[in-house]
Amino acid sequence: MRCLFALPKTAKTFAILLVIVLFACSPAVTPIAIPTSASTDTSAPTNTSLPTITPAPTNTPKPTYTPRPTYTPRPTATFTPTPAPIILSDTGDAVVDIQKWDGPALAHIKYNGSSNFVVWNYRADGEKIDLLVNTIGKYEGTCPLDLDSDEQTARFQIESRGQWEIQVLPFEQIRRVDIPGTFDGKGDDVIYMKGMGRPDLLKVDASQAISNFVIWGYGNDRDLLVNDIAPYSGTVIVASSLPISNGALVLVIEAKGSWSIEVTIR
Image (cartoon, rainbow, N blue to C red; front, side, top):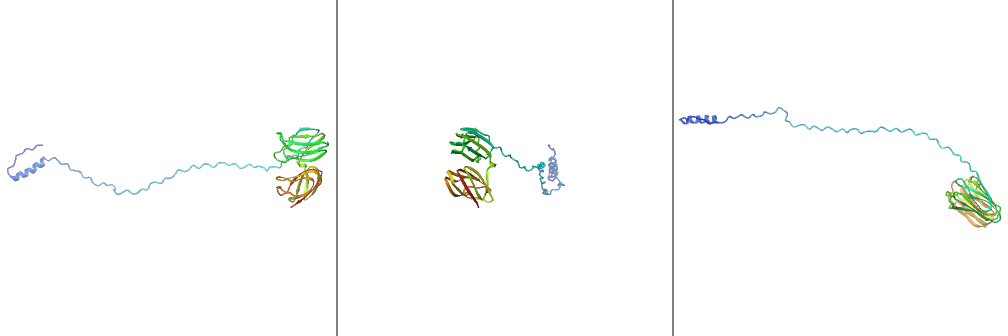
């Protein structure tokens, strides 16, 4: 804005007018409002602890239902009937198949001829098991069958020029003797010895026998106790290399002629 005025004549008047003019020509000044102190509390905030975290509960499975055990009665003793003997007889050479029960058995064999007489037993697969009899002339004796667990007689082969008979008997018909004591016999035989003590010594008298004289011992294992040419007499230890269960022992005797055996225990 432009201001028009007349200059005064005196200095004092001039000074006063100058001040007025300056104020008049200056733009209006708007006063600045000074903010007042806020009424809110400006003190530092207190330390507020964070809320603790509560884990979610784990899922506990419901207990499964366990049924009560059923009552199982004790097994009753099963009675196994003694198998019936198998009787075979013929004249001359023959091959005979049999259906024998599982497990050991006895073969009681007779021959009435005067020439060679030979008997073999075979498994079902055709494999030979043992030479049961090999003699000349009349014969009667008892031989073991299938004492080893892998043996099962299914066939006999007989070489003969006379009449013969083979009786396959249950092993329960074995000849039994009590020990200590003495027993005797003639020819091939199978003996079951049982007593209150463990068999210790065999005192053998085969002085009236001829040809080969053999004694096998069967306990938890097998051992060749005597293998000699009769006439023979001697004493041998039974249990040196032959484990025996419950003092029981089976003797298999191969002989031609009479023999006698005394058994001691310890």
